[in-house]
Image 1 (cartoon, helix red, strand yellow):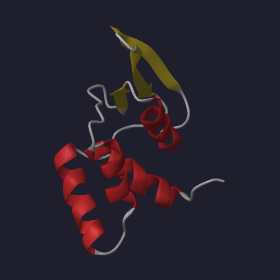
Image 2: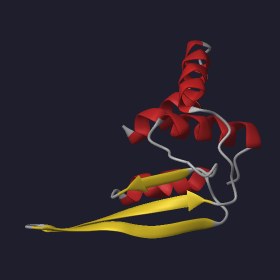
Image 3: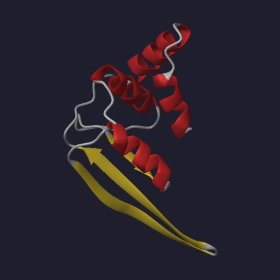
Image 4: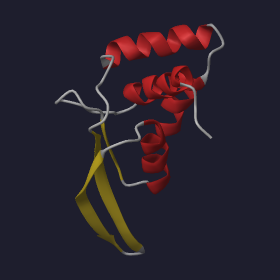
Amino acid sequence: MKLPREKLELFQLGWEVHEEEGGDGHPAYTTADPSLFLAWAAVRFGELHVAVTRALLLEDGVAVEVKATARSWKKRWTKKKAEKLVEKYRKRGILEPFLAKLLGE
């Protein structure tokens, strides 16, 4: 199932509020949670550069942190602007950005 571009951008907006990096202009996300990585990658599909940034050996297993950079995308909003837009959409009943923001928290 392919999301319309307008819906895709709403989800991207929510991720930009939640810890999405992008010092070089490309969105990047770091996590040790595979489900969060997949959720982020679903809206930042295309060329992804993925690197293991940390591996933690725990008593009950291992945690692997990865950082992915979406080379096919450019950041569109600052975090501050994205936060304002998410709140504006939420007040209008458009919940996609708000849900994406909550997913990562």
